[in-house]
Figure 1 (cartoon, helix red, strand yellow):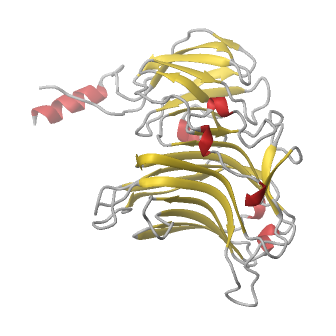
Figure 2 (cartoon, rainbow, N blue to C red; figure 1 turned 120 degrees about the horizontal axis):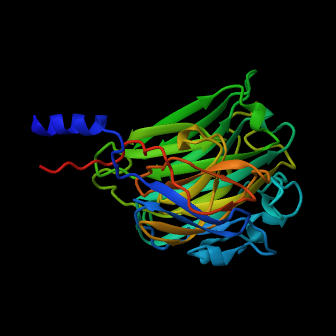
Figure 3 (cartoon, rainbow, N blue to C red; figure 1 turned 45 degrees about the horizontal axis):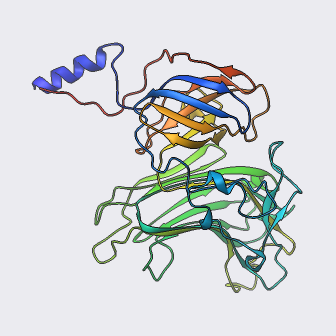
Length: 369
């Protein structure tokens, strides 16, 4: 009873300090590839500070920007994997190159874009990437197209976490975003979704394994800022309790034709492009967005952390597709997925100090007797 009364009083008091991340200041010139320093509190710890992989593919090799990746050897693709670098059809002004899957020629149905491997078990993953289906009638075909796979070292079936598009021939252009999670499965269905065809779009994935025999795993998947999520998923059971050790971003089309009336491959000559791939084994990250609160953003870009402490983060600024002189909001997200309030900055401006005046939304709250 006493704790309940104290909690109510605390929630009504202004200026309560909650344990979520809070940004108090930013210093440095806000420009693409410049270094900025973010000060604040409750950022938590991130080691290594760098993401597992940051691949904007700006150099002449697949190992682009490898000095900004914690594990650059995990970036893996080559001509044998039916991928190639290109300077054509780029997503934004900062991009000099992208990567694309070589068009289907009637025989090849699969390629690996980027892979991540870990020598230890991983329970959380975050992925950001850009994608484009470059064909005028891509969604006019019935296609089962797998593009994210997460699985354990010993799992025979590589679908402990699988996200794929199932393009269905309908008059509405229905697209199904399916998430198969062993031993459970969920499905999201979008209709009239042909707007993404032949255009660059942004995807984000934030996933976590469940405890054994417990439905507390999560899957959050954003397309251009629109979120689809399942927050009570059982991903591990007794006898099948492995965590993740491998994860792929890939092009994989279903093989064979289930029904002769439907073509199970993409149209001949259909490229799929990728760019700006950010992959990490923690939810801790720094991002900019186009709204003061993280969930309200319909456009987000990852920054590349280089040093990280509970009160200070040094990061390489990544402008992404935001235009010069844009006002954007800076966010710090901790390992539990709690986001700070946005700190307004201007691309091309110089930030120095500054205090976030609004309190953070409630995060973790501890009350002592």
